[in-house]
Length: 327
Image (cartoon, rainbow, N blue to C red):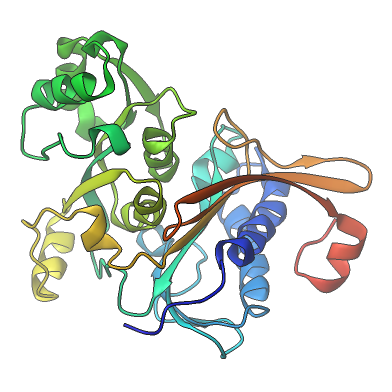
């Protein structure tokens, strides 16, 4: 692993997620997910070039649906400073953005070189995410009702009080039935499981636990935040096709292993930033006025556990002159 960064990089990388949000938010509800993603990628690539880091993209989301992306293996940063593994999703929830639905966000996580789990050809992961109070009571192989009962006890609630976040996908039909049978409540979202993981570990949110299969890259991205917030993510690769399964086997990755937050991010010197694009209860979306654009972001330094919520006012006339963002 490379030498740990001395400064709080969360306050640097939030400028990157802000750039991604500002550039992509113009495509809200316009039905073109690639155009919004491409705008965010261009703006974020320019913003990365201003940072004094030697970054390497470990996770460049977009590969599984051939969307525009910051490519896996791509170098980012000014070429000087700490060597970092970088996970990035310019628009987490491209469909949410394209169809004007809430909770699309722009996300970046960084950690010292060699400390971030590289999912390789894995696209999908079974996940279980909880906050600090319940981090020691979950088991990925336990029955759903047992996990819910243990989490409820740890939180001092009844199972009927719990809110479970899941993606509304056909693969979750049985899991949804099990959660309902146990008596817990469910919050379903069509896309965007990073936001679900964040809500599960944030005390401000009504979500208590996230369950189900989502993206492997998104799992590692979320782990940057979960680690700093003292929560837990348990994950196991869950290929959804024969091609993906064979690619994982060929890469020598053990798909049976249960990964913890400390397996996904093996250093306390990790940093995370997310900026809202399309809005929602967790992070408000980009708001434009005649002169300013307003963004809302979450930034986190894992070593200290310091979590900041930032409301930023961007002078778009000035910003458009020095960035890839156009007003």
